[in-house]
Image (tube, rainbow, N blue to C red; front, side, top):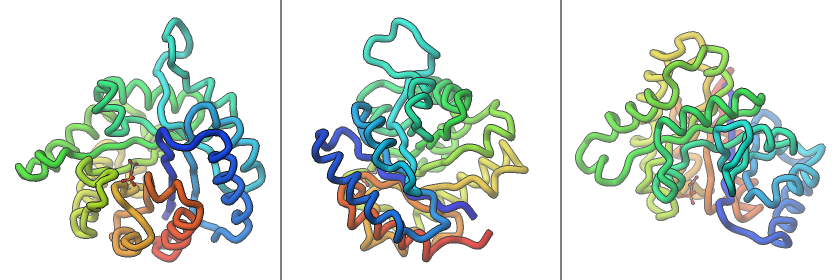
Length: 256
Ligand code: PGA
C-alpha cells in the first residue's frame, strides 16, 4: 500500500531558513527508507528553490494552495499550471486554514482538485471536522459531506491519483492529536465513502492523518489499517523530526 509523509510548512521560514531545512533534508535523502512517498510544501516564493535543492533526492515538492482558473485577472493567485511548470508535483487542496481564513468552499475545493489533476500533479485533498462537530457527534456526517462535495463526479482514473488527508480541525496545531482509534474510525469511514465513489480505486488511495502528529505519537496513529501516513505541520519544520516520521511511516507501512 502506498505510504506518504507530506510536510506542510505553512507560512513559516524565510529564504535562508528554508534553504537550511532543504539542505538538511537533501543531505539525509540517501538514508531515507524506500517505499515512502515524501513531499515538502514550502511557501510559494521557495518552491522553485526547493525543486532545485531536492533534485535527485526522493523528496518531491508540493504547494499549499492554487487557484482553479488556468490564468487571468486573479491578483495574488497562482495557477496549477504555474506550479507544474516549476517542477511541483503535488498541491494541498482544501486545508482547513484555507477554508477558515480564506472562505474556501467545497465547490472551490472541487474545482481546484480538477485544476490540479488537469496539469498532471497530485491533489492532497484535506477534510476534517470542527471541535463542535465532534462534540455534537456529527463528525462523520460533516466529513462525509465534504468528501461528497469535493470528489463526486471525478472519474475513476482521477480518483486513483488522489491523496486524501483527514485533519480534525481541533487537532491542527493544538498539540491535541486525535486518538489512534478516532483516526482509524474516521479513515475507515472515508475509505467507505471513497469506495462508493470509486470502487475500483478506493483501496489504493492513501489516506493520511494530520493534526499534531509527531514522532512521539506517530507509530500509534499510523498503525490503523486505513492510515497510510501523515500530513505534518509543526513537526515538518524540523528536519530531524520530519525524517523520523518518514522512518516511522516506513515501519508501519501496510503490505501491498
Ligand atoms: P500540525 O498541522 O501538524 O501543526 O497540527 C497539520 C496540518 O495543518 O497539516
